[in-house]
Length: 109
DNA sequence: ATAATGACTGAAT
DNA sequence: AATTCAGCCATTA
Image (cartoon, rainbow, N blue to C red):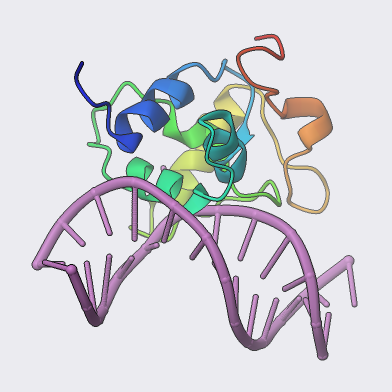
């Protein structure tokens, strides 16, 4: 069978994140069976084309903050997309895992 | 095959 | 609680 690159698995997993929910890089890595590959997840999302159907904006770092460091406008775009889904950072500027954290495919979508 | 890079994380300060 | 350090991983040159 075709070896599915780690990148493809990451994209497939992120595609399952329901609207209005967020997940951390480490969580995605964990769901893929590689709990220490958080960076690999970030890298995978970094290769996404601007017209992708993958909801990359639903992935944030463990603190519930935007962790993008690429183009200057991307962080703002992510905040905007999240806000459009009802995901808003709390008083501290962090997104609450209790309210918006996605538990994974088995945790209930 | 080795070295460098980066949308990460946990532990130590 | 906030910041700093060092480890970990997949991918690219």
